[in-house]
Length: 200
Figure 1 (tube, rainbow, N blue to C red):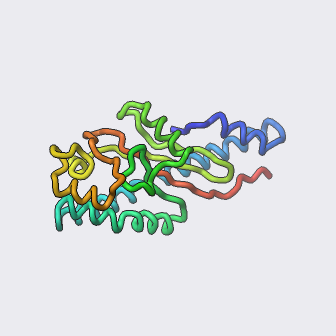
Figure 2 (cartoon, rainbow, N blue to C red):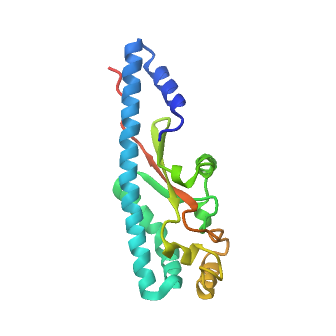
């Protein structure tokens, strides 16, 4: 799903500044760029999520949920940064209720998070939009695995005392608890710098 479509089309018209044929060509190129980056973003997020889940699962297998929390505290940010560098894009996770305050949303991300929050869980999907020369991509994060509840569920029911203790120790400003299965948890946000449109 592509949001802010009208703004994109108007931007194309302003940049083209020529005949209706030029405008149509620019709009087609812009649509192709957005579609390409949505597909690219979907692929990269799938890889990123798989990598993160595999690493957390391994940590949990070695020492249970408390070890997984400790692992995320030490390694999660560096893993995301490594992926961003490898794929030559900006990559981060954000949420209305972040565990790590460094992942709190900026004003633009908050608008997308609010938009996602207004959708039903079945309607959540990735989206792309243009901001000047940059293409932004967002993909929702949902509570899809029961294992996620061991660190993000209800304290005393899903999250045991040992896990809650290390969460409070490592993340004193934590807000990422009391989720249930299929809840909207946050989003991945990627930013690409594509080649500028050609209007020759």
